[in-house]
Length: 377
Image (cartoon, rainbow, N blue to C red; front, side):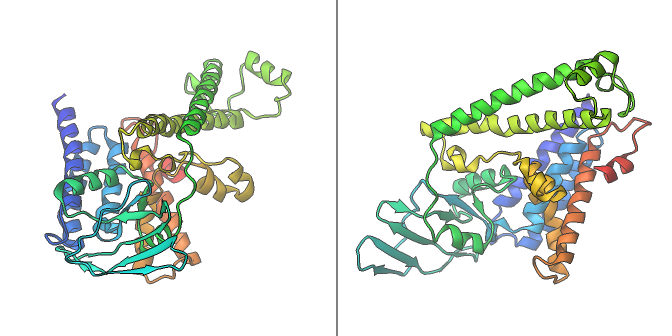
């Protein structure tokens, strides 16, 4: 019991260290010094927690900390995207502003000169207004400690970078065009509630099937023949051509699809509803920041295996899995978008994905080979 508590403390310490690292301004520690100082400490905490059953979640958070502290530099490159709130008014003392009026008087553009901040970063802002519509604006790494804490807390929870710009090209895109039409929160909530209901119906059907399949109850081969009653059911409904392996894989896939969909849809309904009554800001309450975790299954028909992983399957860990491959490609001076760069990213991402998946396997099982499972996954 004491060992488990110590592992929980180590896991919590890793989270605290990640927040502390991102709260440290660049005037105190540069990007390299920050990574060297905090990444080994965070990974040491996760290595300790790994030994007491925290394998899966420890591996995910360890890679996420490396993504934010080593492979990326959020304090310099990232910006929190805003559409619904107005940007803060620039200070008239340090900035020299130029105002260019358009002939029709309905459009104006304000370019605010770059200002060297205390920590050495340049704060660039560009706001374009069209009568009552305002383009998106990005909130860079704040100077105020409280605003920095809120900014960092949102970043740590944004595994898919929803609501963030992570490069200058994205920043130029979002701050130079009008935002898309706002989607109705009420319609969004109704749609998601229907999705939740469908997922529960499918899960009930899946669990009902698992009650009659011995493969789902005891350790049998995945190719084990169906029991007589179950085989007769498939035959009566003209599904006898389906092999037991195919059916069991489809059942497992449906279960995972519904579980991941519920994982993203349930908090989306809650936070969008809270955003509608003004209890949370646009980062939490905006409809656009809550896309479906699972993609369109028709992407498999269009692109095959690439569509399965790129369009259909969940993208929760895409950023933390592709970060090492992208960094390796840049260090080798490979052209962005080249075949060899793409191969490096895919091999690295799938290798890390297999390691994470095998981390959740029972460690004391004699019939499970983690290396074999990792290569399969």
